Image (cartoon, rainbow, N blue to C red; front, top):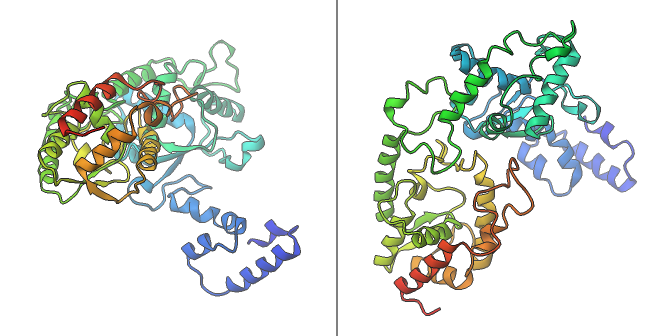
Length: 415
């Protein structure tokens, strides 16, 4: 019911509410309710439950809910992810609960971390049904210790891959988290397996098969799949990536317009400057540059986010064709780069332009990589989701400078 939320409304606002309530007596669609511009903040407040439901999250039980692909979500107590790593160390992943199995199926599934934090975070508190190994105070301590180490607040929702990398990078041992060490009391029994080294072993296995960046796991093959069966993130095989490269290049050579996310047009310049030429293992940018150099009529379409035609062979392309570079969060920094490029070139997603004309605009209007890429990570550091390996330069990358000079000459542009 909306009425209790607006008990102290102004007369004008109350009139709007009364009109809305009368309309609500008729059947109204979810989309119409959420987007009704006359409701303003009323619509936003009333739609919170709907928006949460769209993500596949049940705010009370935290159980798996209906949803497809990357939008299906789960909620978890933080300590459960450490338990999953321990299970890897023990080689007992067959007993994973449904939520951990969902992460194995899709490492980029949205995960909401909830715990009994109380105070101003009480809005997201679950009940104590999942408490284990001691008092409610110990269970609260364990979850908060984990969140403190990975620098996240309770109630946060992130792709599982990002959370897992934070855990692996910042929690090397469960000591002081899952047990109470020398301060052990009856109220703080802790997990009896906390000192068995299972987490440490599971973490080592996890890092062995994790895919932190585009230039990792290049040698992982089909013959390695059995060895990686317990890993929570399993890399793409080089055989799969090679097959995808062949298919994507064939598609590119016959495309009416080549879909490319805007900022990697600049990456192609850097690659050209550092000497990368076909065949290139982890993307199709060098092949694209050679193709448009030889085909003056080639066209490029501004794609929104990672596109299979360019990124098919990348180890950091997930099964939903999303970029999971830089420990899972480069899709975010890349989106900002993309819109910066579009802004400078006065283009929009979906625009189609002659490829050589496009590169003339790029080489003319973007003389340095620094304004587009270099300030992406300004003022932040790991584990921030804005931290990016290419985001910390104030002067143009040398490879971009050289690539720009070479391509101006190769295209025959007068700039």
